[in-house]
Length: 135
Image (cartoon, rainbow, N blue to C red):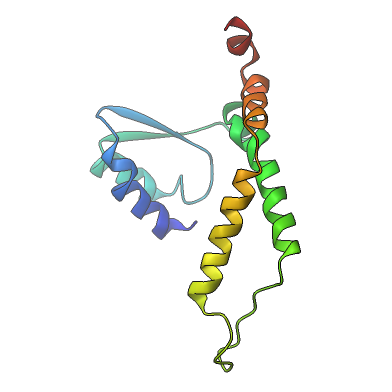
């Protein structure tokens, strides 16, 4: 993701669900905490952007810790199993950019389907054990 895509996401997706006044917590990814991001959040969406403390993602975002690692591992393994899709603009039978994107989307769906409910549950139990133990 880059700043252009992030700005579009803020305006067209997140903006629809923000009720003023709001605080939006974000990690420290460069485009999330850019001057433009702060400006859009405050001036256009009426919300305050609050970045999480550095190196706190593993504590505050259990999906980053317990789910994204297995998902990325599945994605990489599926990609390695596939015949690599290489395009050659000179070859009329070469896969198009659209076909390459579709292969990537299908691979991501398959990788996500390989992440079990138990993996997701355990990631939350690890991140917030006292809340899970009470229920």
